[in-house]
Image (cartoon, rainbow, N blue to C red; front, side, top):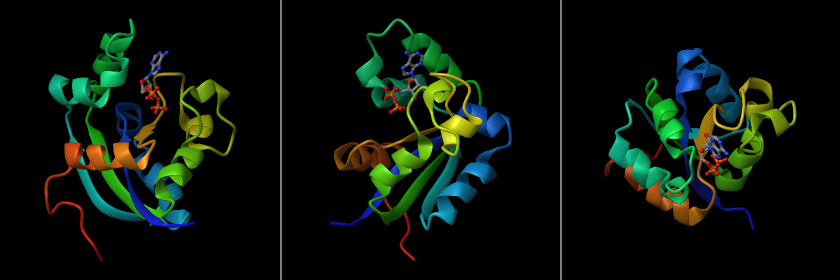
Length: 142
Ligand code: ADP
């Protein structure tokens, strides 16, 4: 059953540094998704520890934190029918080198870590992540 969902996207430092925010947002908007909230942020170590807590014991965790703090990110609240799974499909798999051409990571990503954008992977994580990056009233209805 289709239902309208809101997903939390982070345009990662590689996207911001390379000037590709517009390119990626254009791909989402072309699929009918609506930007409902957007802000540029420099991520603290605290918010990254929370956001990537499932990776905290991995040897590459400090490298991810360093990458995610190498430039600002743009947090986007994106709504649409089945937005959570459809945005993940548009993004492609985590490893950009294994992502099909035509996906965002396949066309614009570099590798397993430098992969353009984060997108929520379930309704539960979307709810937690929207709260993590947007305050009450910052996700708008129109
Ligand atoms: P996704 O972002 O596709 O949901 P994960 O939640 O597994 O993937 O990982 C979060 C982020 O951590 C990835 O997007 C990537 O930037 C980084 N990452 C994950 N696994 C690795 C790895 N093996 N080596 C380097 N970076 C990784």
